[in-house]
Length: 295
Image: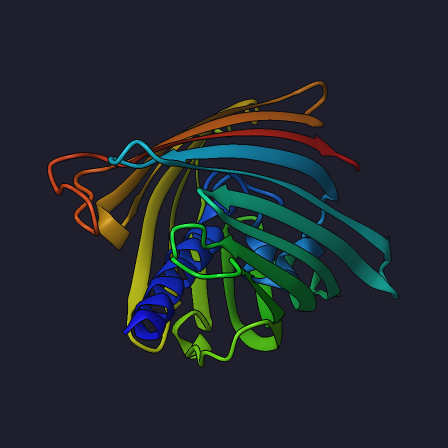
C-alpha cells in the first residue's frame, strides 16, 4: 500500500508541475507581436520571425492553500543569415514546495520568404527537462530523492505576415533517466498545438489582435482565447481566457527606446480553483518580463 501511495503521489506531482511548466511561458508576448512570450517552447518555428530577441521572465503562482510556485526563464534567438537560419535558446526553472523542474532547450528555424505575402518558418527543437522531488513526508529509511530526466523534442511550422499569424506544432516527451521503477504515461503531456492571430489596423495607430491557441493532448484539450491592443507601437495591453480551471490573464506592456526595450507585466487569476483545494478560493499569478530586441 505504501508503494502504491508513493506512485500515485509522484504521478500527481509530475502532472501538476509539468502542466504548469507548459503554461508558464505563454502569457505575455511573442517574438514579434505581444500575445505569447516564450512561444518557442511550444512552437520552435516562432523564432524565425524577423526580429531577434533576448528576454527574461520571473513569475509567481499563489495557491489557495498558501503554497506558491516560483519560476524564471531566459530566452534568446538570433538569425545567423537568411541561408543558415535562426538559432534559439530557452531556459526555465520552477520550484513548487520540494519539487524542482528545469528545462533547457535549443531551437532552430529556417525561413521561406514570400515577400509581401509573408513568411513561412519551419522549426525543430530538442531539450532536457529535469525533475527532482524530495519526498520527505514518506516514512522511508533511507529517504530518497526522486529524480527524472525527460527528452523534449518539438517540430513546428509558423506563418507570419503583416495581418495574420498561424502555426501548428507537436511536443513529445520521452524518458531518458530516472531513479525509480514506476511507469508513467508521458502521452498525457505530449501536445499538438494550433494557434492563430489576426490584426485589424485602425487609423494606423491602433492595432486590434484577437488570438487563439489550442492544445490537444491524449485525455484533454485546452483553449486559450485572447484579445490584444497596441497603440502607436508603444503601449499594449491584452486579456486572455484559459479554460484550465477558468484561468484569466491581464497583460500590460511598453516598447520603448526606439522599440528595442520591452517592459511587461501579467496578472492571472482563476474564477475558482477546485482541484485539490477549496473551490471557493482563487489561484493568482504575477509575471514580469524584461526584453531587448537585438535588431
